Length: 102
Image (cartoon, rainbow, N blue to C red; front, side, top):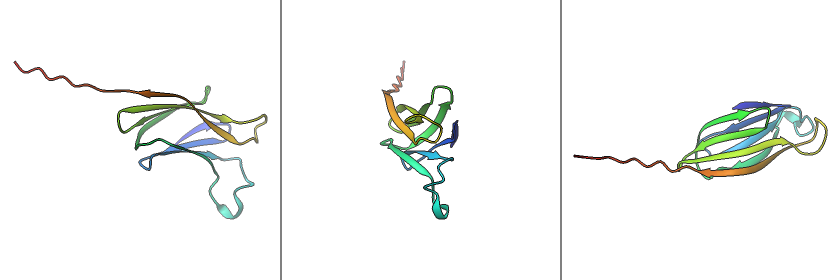
């Protein structure tokens, strides 16, 4: 879980879903319900995550040797607009191990 700033919290895990939470959205929080505003299917377990608050980039290391880079920010103008998830780049990293026996 990471706090991106501007009232946006990001979480992901072994369920394979990146979730964006809006701390400031009280309209959808009637009765103490979750304030989840957006989901992104990662197509695999998330093993690690880091965020860059200034650019809104979220980097997730997933199963299958994949790294997903997403940009998260508020759609529209004003601090009360809804968070938006935009996948900007998907990078596939392949690790090759070579064993030499002599």
